[in-house]
Image (cartoon, rainbow, N blue to C red; front, side, top):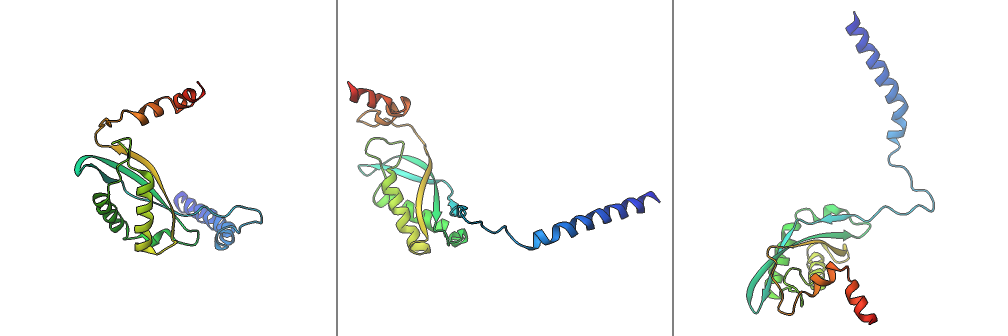
Length: 170
C-alpha cells in the first residue's frame, strides 16, 4: 500500500507546483523594464578557416582563423543556416586571389583585409546590413616561420608592447 501512496503524493506535489508555476510560464519571457539595456546582438561563431599565407606566388603557411559574425539586432542567427560553407569557400577563394598575408609576419593574417572580404561575402550571401561586424577571435599558424624583416610582432607581444613605448621615451 505504500507504493500507491507514494505515487499519489508525487502526483499531488507535481500538480501543486504546476498550478503555481503555470501562469508564470505561460506569460512568456519577462518584459523589458524602462532603462534596461537591450538584449545583446546575436552572433554566429564560424568554424576555423584555413587561410593560406602566400608570398611571391608560393604557399608558405596556413593560419587557422576563428571568427565571430555579429548580426544586426533584428536579424536572427538562423539567416546563416546553410550559408557558412559557402562563406568559407568564398573566403578561401579570395585568399588565393589576393592573399591575406600580413606585412610583418607569416603566422597571422592581415585582419583588416580578411574582415573586409568576410563582410563583403556575407552581404552577398545573406543580404546587405545583416552582418554588422566580424571579430577574429583566434589565429593559429600551422608552422612558425620567421619573417625576413625580423620578429616584430613576437617581440612586441612578449613584452606586452612596453618595449616600443619605453624606446619612444628615450
